[in-house]
Length: 134
Image (cartoon, rainbow, N blue to C red; front, side):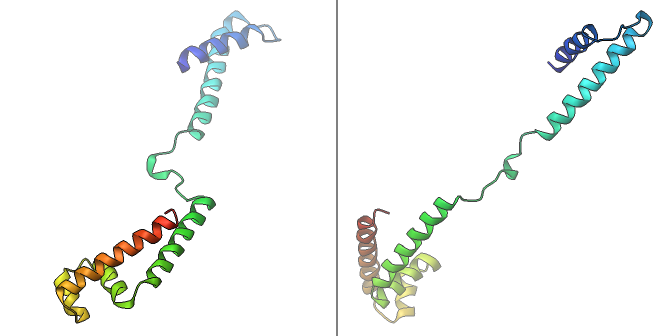
């Protein structure tokens, strides 16, 4: 593709040249034009090469940051509405991925109480999220 374009452009430039071209130097003249066109095109293409996937701009826009901040604030406020023991059981389960038995031991309550508290906390959070359209 480049070769055909450069060849065509070299002959067009030679044809429209204001000064006459001597037959003895016509080949060198065309090759010089072609070389200059190639180098100019190569430099342009090198500057405009596509970015690799790992170099793409990934910074979030201000709208997305504001939306995420608002969602985070709603989640934090919803967690604050939970009773302390329910919030602790839910966060330990979510963050530490401890078993219900280990949570029961660490909070000093029964295994069934841990299951009930986590279940009720999830239901309450789901209701709050539904009301706030998250």
